Length: 229
Image (cartoon, rainbow, N blue to C red; front, side):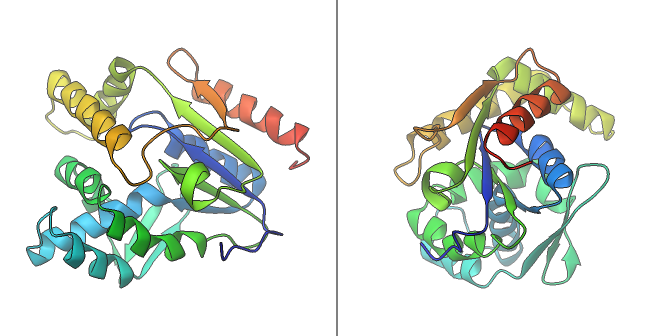
């Protein structure tokens, strides 16, 4: 693995809507470390593919797109990182529900995951990295100093997504969101390449009945135990 072992990495994995993105950015801000939203990379591939008329089942063409990605993340006080693709701010575009559904299908291709592996690992720079995704602790950074697997019930995750979209003024219904989350869970956990699951040494947290601050404090407490603070 071409990762500088002197650079500490914290991974936060989990299913869609578990809160891993918010928690990862809070941790990165607190520690003043670099941040990687790996899920955004698959959304970027999906967005680029949709713009070029490439379907979610065209694995080789998708892998070529993945290898050519020029992407960067800009932290935001609102905990919604600004995502740049080839110099264009695509933060809102990649959060479209249709792109999210396509990204889940794109991520199922082993050749796409392989194409993005080096890019993901390149974010591990000093003083440290907080990486959020679905296989950060199992496949991308197996030697991470702290691995967190954050989950919540499908119903709670759908409710969170519903509120998030409503707050943005979007016209959405809860039932389709719940169905989509359950379908993504099954697709992500059953795929042959890096299926969604906790690393054997991960700290597993169910956030269904926890606030963001409670989750954050539990992870920070573990980080202190491991000498990261």
